[in-house]
Amino acid sequence: MPGRLIYLMGPSGAGKDSLIDAARQPLSVLGCDVAKRVITRSAESVGEAATEVTAEEFEQRVLRGDFSLFWRANGLGYGIPVEIDSWLAQGRHVLVNGSRGYLPQARERYPDLIPIVLTVDTEVLRRRLLRRARESLNEIEHRLRRNDQFANAAWLDEEHVLRLDNSGALEVTLVGLLAILREQGVSAVPDRT
Image (cartoon, rainbow, N blue to C red):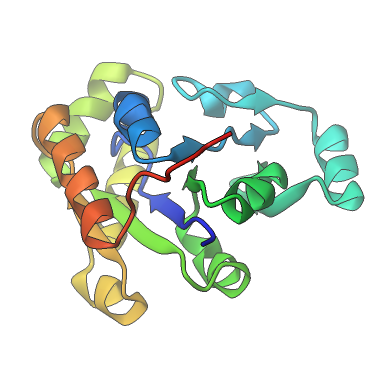
C-alpha cells in the first residue's frame, strides 16, 4: 500500500519547525519521513532544516520537474522534492511543511493526504514572536492577524482540516500529532528498505 502524505500547515511562529524536529524520531518509528523543503532565502528557513537556493536555481528546478509540490509566498519560492513520490510508492509516509494557500493543489495531487493545521493562542504567539525578535512590531501584528485566519473554525471545517493546538508544551503537541496520525491509520511499515 502507498504511504500517506501528512501536510502540516500553520502561521509563522506557530512552532512547526520545533514540532517537526521533536517528531523526527517518533515519526521514523511509524515509517514516516520528513521532507526537506527547498527555499529561496535562508532567512525564512531559520530553525528549519531546509535547502537554500537562489531564485534562479529554484526556477530551473521547477522547469526540470524536481518538485512534487511547489508554491510562492511572500516573495519566496518553496519546493518539496519529487523524491517523496518514490517514498510514498514504497509505502513510506511523508510529512511536509506545507502552505495553507497551496492546500487545494496538494490535495489534487495527493487526494489521500492528511491536512493538519498547527494553531496557537494569539497571546502565546505574540510572546513567542516578541521573544525571537526577528520581526518589527508591525510585522508581528500582521502575523497575529494571519494566526487568527488559521484558527478560524469555519475554514477548518470547510476544508476538512485537522486542528492541532500548540499553545502549551511542545511535548503535549507531539503526543497530539501522533494521536492524529494513529487515528488516520498511519502506522509502521514492515520493511523500509
